[in-house]
Length: 199
Image (tube, rainbow, N blue to C red; front, side):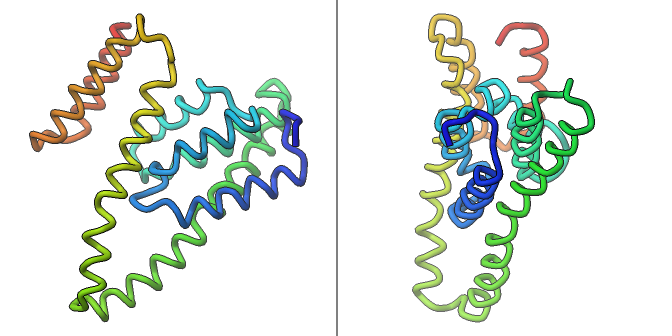
C-alpha cells in the first residue's frame, strides 16, 4: 500500500473507504471531504493538494448535484494511476473506472439508508425521539461543513500570502449567516476575484 499508484487491492480499499464515508456523510458528501483529503492526499499520495482542491472548486462552480466532486476525485485518481493524461486511452479508461468506483461507493449505502430511514421517520414523525434526532443533527452538519471550509481555506499554508483568502472566507461566512443573498452571487464574486488575481 506504500505505492503512489493504486493496485487492485488499493482500488478495493478506495471503494470500501468511500462506502464507509457514505454512511458518515450527514449533510452531503462535502461534509466528509476532510477525511477524503486525509485518505487520498496525505495517506496514499494519489492526489496532490491542488488536484483535490480543484476537484471540489470545479464541481461546486458547475451546475448539478453537490456530489459531483466525488466523480472528479475518482477520475483524477484513475488518471494519475495510469500516468496522467499523456498515457492516452488507458488513462481515460482508468479515470472512468475511478469515477465508477467512487460514485457507486458514495451513493449506494446512503441512498438505501436515506430511503429506508425517510419512510420510517415519516410514519413516526410525531414521536419525540424522531424530533430530537432531527434537532440534534443540525449542529453536527454545521461542524462538518466548518471542517470542510477550514480544510479548503488552509490548504495553501502560506499565511503571509493567503490573508486575502482568510478575509474572503470570513466575509462570505458573515454574508451567508446574516443575509439572504444567493450563494451563486458569492461564487461569482469569488471567481472574478480569482480571475483578477486578487485571491
